[in-house]
Length: 150
Ligand code: CMP
Image 1 (cartoon, rainbow, N blue to C red):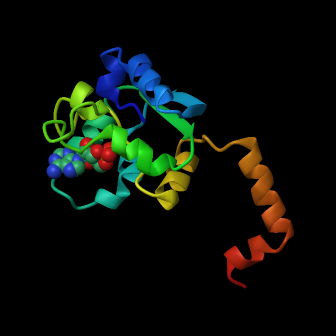
Image 2 (cartoon, rainbow, N blue to C red):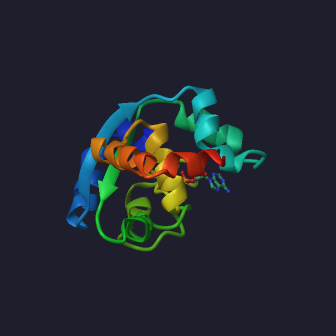
């Protein structure tokens, strides 16, 4: 995700060019403005943290760019080039070091594991037709009943 401050400062293209230069392919992309309630759902894992309301207010303050990216070892690689949460602590050459302002306005979000990546992809409606086809064939093999637990 390119966060609202970076979208608002006209940095989306530069950030995505940086990501593409690292071998990522853009598979889906969407500009979305979240309501505060939707932002609270997206960041549900941070419920109760002291910075949550600031984060919710910020993430819902303007359009963000949700992007589905693909490459080998995508999660680890994207987190590496995004850099540390705090731009002041992010390594030289990382996106947050270059474009982030502070811990809240840190330019990008990167999913932290396969489970959150799948949930975030569904949250933003970035599921590909091919994923739906895989889910359907999994269901046909009995996957759906396993998920239902009966
Ligand atoms: P992100 O990668 O979007 O995941 C959760 C976000 O919470 C994180 O980036 C930061 O923007 C924000 N965040 C995490 N820790 C803090 C903190 N201590 N203070 C303010 N914001 C934080």
